[in-house]
Length: 132
Image (tube, rainbow, N blue to C red; front, side):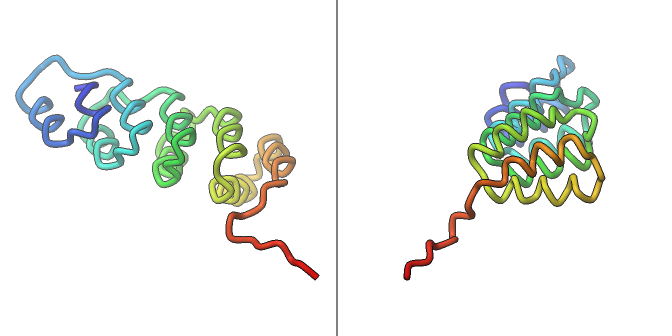
């Protein structure tokens, strides 16, 4: 099941869930997050009890799967390694940093918000330089 989840094989995953007893591990959701397989994550969340590790959100942020990361923040907030997520967001994705900033500002989490604020030297991709 872990392999099927990692490769986004939802039909295979459903078949294994129904017909086999071996089950899966937390690696299934962690690797599905890395691959951007959101439907697989939703299936595992609703049909399985293994859950995920902190690697799931880190994998999603590393590979710029913003929608998946947002979902983890909502449904698995205690499984978010916030500092690692911020590191990847700072490097790769202005929009993810913006979302994190707004999310943490609303939650009032000051230490993480300070880290995000210190990282806002990024320029949005569509911003053009002004020439005179």
